[in-house]
Amino acid sequence: MASHQSRRMNYIINPDIATKLEEQLVIGENITRGMNMFRKPPTPSDTCHICLDPLPYIVNDQIICVICGFRTCRKCKKKDIKINMRWYCDICKRGLKNHAKERKHIEDRINKGDYLHCILLGDYHRRGEAGYEGGVGASLYYYHLAAEHGVALGYKLIGDAYGYGASNHGVKKDLAKCVRFLRVAAKMGCVEAHQKLIELCKRDSPQVALRHAAVLARVGNEEAFTYIMDCLRAGIFDRNDEFDDVVREFRENRR
Image (cartoon, rainbow, N blue to C red):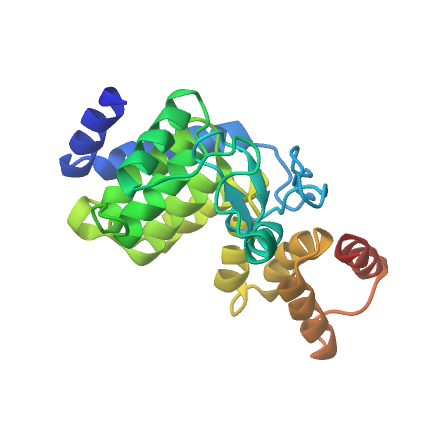
């Protein structure tokens, strides 16, 4: 992971950090050109080993073992811990004793090509948790690394950085770029990007917000379904066949 470490330091202090992010944005837009942003995201390929259902669409609803990389539902894992008091991974049967070992295992997973773990390190840096450097700028290297390797959530989190601004690290608040990053992530099937786009579109583009909400409702997101129902009651749109399809798919995914 030494190469990642050196790149990370250069990336943070490099005054051209925004240029690197913009280059990745252009790459993402080229990759996703022609994709339908409002299609239903593909069902997660892995299943939870406890309930045997497909993993949740939202990454934060998954528990990821940083040692073996296996993922399980957050609900199932919390219930398992409460009932059986098993703090170790049920697959590799190993646990972590300190944050230094956790970081080493995460970096090992990244070196093996599991770039979703970049999100874990980026989040630690952003929140300044567990001894990691705090701030959005410190996390951007890992979000960029994830995006570089096709992780849609990486694009979404870079978009968030532009949405909030991190000018001390070369990223100024820019809602236009924020939306462009979010649109790339949404086209790649990132449900978190659809959630953010609903917030940004509610006031000025309610019809677009509804289309994003429909995507989330189709995969069982209750908040998005409630938003659609509120819009129907408020007369923002009339009931139609597409609405009936969304209701049916929402109920199927909530079973």
